Amino acid sequence: MPEPQPPLLDRVRDCIRAANRRGVTAYALSMKAGVARSQISRLMRRKNSLLVPTAEAIVKAAGYEIVLVRQRTREECIDAIRDSGRLSPIEALRLKGAKIPLSEEEVKP
Image (cartoon, rainbow, N blue to C red; front, top):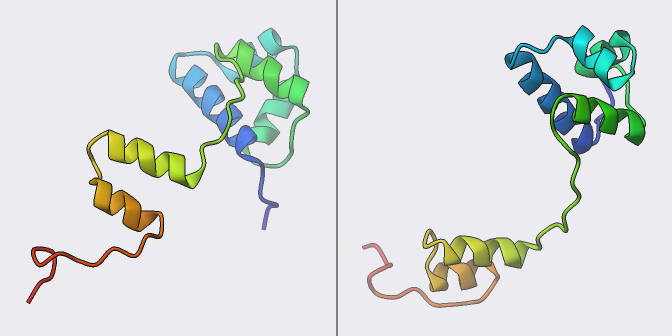
């Protein structure tokens, strides 16, 4: 069984697939990125990993860029869902671990 790979490599694969859907071949992508086509092939078959500069070159050649953002905490995600209106304030507090008794309307007979 192959070793689990970092999510970054999954995103690089997504960029390659998107470029392929736009008609950019693996060969053209490899030429533009300055890497061997076999390296892209092995990456897509999950046979190897990449150095960050190589991943960056492939992503750039596919028309994307790598951007790092701070990861949200669980509480921030819950707040964002609540603010979008898909979660009531009470449901958000329950997800955060607050012990809130059920109201009579929520109790099913």
